[in-house]
Length: 296
Image (tube, rainbow, N blue to C red; front, top):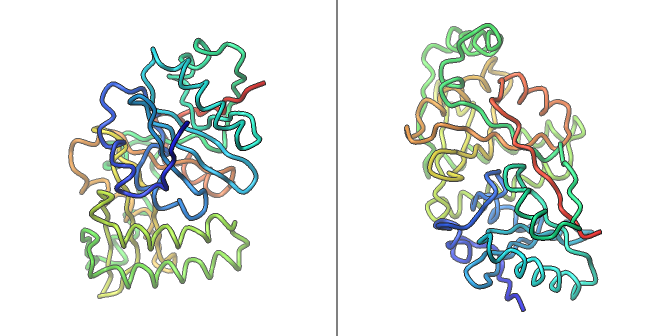
């Protein structure tokens, strides 16, 4: 029987050092996301013989995500399947990257795998985002140069406690515009995640950046590590009345990240056309394909 605990920085601490466990490389594995979205997806965590099981509820059904030892996967799938049955459901595992899909299909050949395009992550080369070189990134380079030309005295700073009130005010303005444009409930719910992250900043290992123009906050962003070489950008907000502000915060933040992060994960597009276009135009090196695995 699995003993699930709500996702908190303390309960999710084992995810910071999973050692030999096989784990997805997507943004789902980031502790900052697991904890800050707990209010919406009711994320919880349990362990079984050194393996880690995450469980979520989206309002309709439960889903799981596993960190496992390959030789124990057959047993672990049986345990998780029994847990789903106690909830009156069939086992459903989400966020399975294509490079580890074979473990599941070898352990349980009757499982069905479905590609989930809307929840596949966009991954970028850090140097590409830092330099914006080449013809394909010309438009992004133009936006950045325009911002620098219009606001030559802008200042970039790491996001700190002193910036929180200004960040929340900018986010509130962004939400009001989003409501007028018909943005989704999940986008609006993001405000709760932002407040949570600010309240647990150090515990979550968050890193952020801000841009000010004449003392006014015009953009902020933050994220956290997925692993030793990949960084997850969770939130990016900008005042669009400052032309090129999004391009500026994107570029400045990447250039100020610790050098160990070679890859930047900018998460999924959720099937939203505007997000898909924005993420695609930054020329990802790959779209991290994710699958949903279910019992037939």
